[in-house]
Length: 256
Image 1 (cartoon, rainbow, N blue to C red):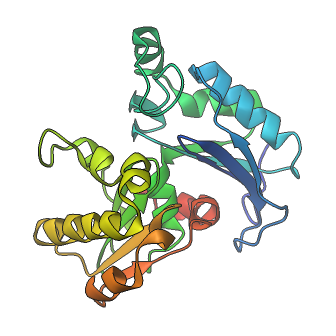
Image 2 (tube, rainbow, N blue to C red; image 1 turned 30 degrees about the vertical axis):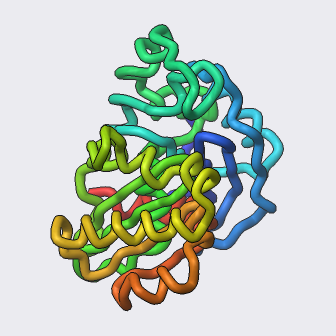
């Protein structure tokens, strides 16, 4: 593995979602050095195909000294404990493939990416990378990403807390947070009713976390209606989805 530039490293930041995989290369200050590239998430998606997809994107971008990968699911020390979308046959809300469940469980994605790209890698939950791009580093900060489902990340004093798969916690009528405010329900309900659901989720989580600041990001955060946004409170902030890329640089300094 080549020796990376640790003083002013360039970072390949990869944001892996249920519907698309985006990437760009940034300098140490977080400035983009290439237009972000997005490709549809291919399915079925065993671990090897994800790594090859990342390598294919990287081949068309400037050289990087390290890589940050954010992906959905429970990731511990770069190893997949469980991932919700990538074990399905054709993408989110389709049938689960038992073989893919087996192949993903315990897979060391960090090691696989490092071996394939030849640079140090950091692999985290995608909401954690997103949060790294927006948190102030003061107090308790919760990040919720609204996209295919619901992602979450918790920071205390700028340090990343152990990940909780909040998205799969039961909510009501046998639903989960993932299904309650995910993309499928936004499409079915429309932005107005869906936004009211988002508000109910926020108010339900407030006494659980007692955050100093809550950040709402992900591709659907901008679909929250102005009326609901005003009622969420001054401690709730909408942040751009681009944070999933920009956070790829800062994540290296926030992981304890």
